[in-house]
Image (cartoon, rainbow, N blue to C red; front, top):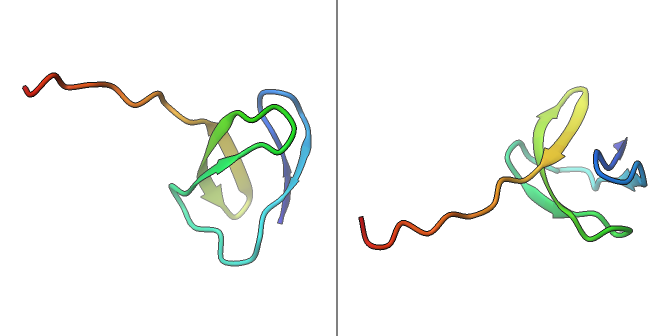
Length: 55
């Protein structure tokens, strides 16, 4: 599965077995990306992890 990074447009070849909600890293810009669809393949910039401060 080949798609493009939404940040830098670098072509990314995802391995077979890539799953929905999987987090991958763009090999070019190092941006963390989330797989939001596998057919067709669609990546979005992964949300930043937020601290809950024990709440």
